[in-house]
Length: 203
Image 1 (cartoon, one colour):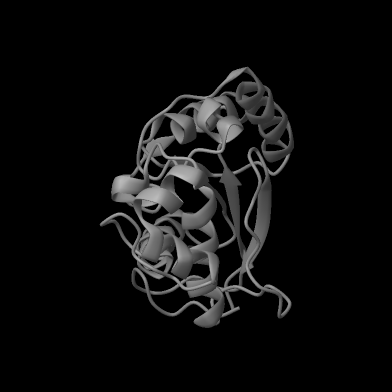
Image 2 (image 1 turned 135 degrees about the vertical axis):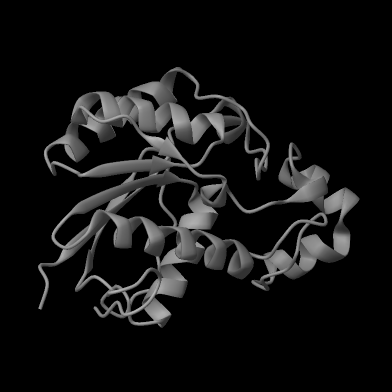
């Protein structure tokens, strides 16, 4: 059996929109001052893991976080649009009160726990499948025994972990995939590398 891989998932640092409680989706606000500090703290921890590669969403808040992590690790992060946050269409830029007023049926379904397509965007399951596919490709290219860092977004990462855990590709100890806070990370074990891209992983 090939040596275990590690997948380190990092959520970007805070933005002004996070602080204001606005839905970001694939809108592109940058990190605020606290967000940069959160990225710095995450970078210190991730650097000690000696990752082989860092990849990030191409949205600014994730890319800025990844640049900070990469500087601590001596690596230049690559970007991939598949790691973007869930698309929220017309919800992007709204706060909860505005979303409830403008999209009452969608808001009611979402607050009831349904995975709805908000504002003409995509569901969390769809975003998770997109991100999970990208992550498997990064792991395959890195090879056995390597640590790969992916810097992305809260809902997209949560959805991807759900896909990977359901497929038996990672283990979460029976718990639901966490929704990472700004600047938080999680370390996941991937048991063995596939002989071909995107297939053959076992936790």
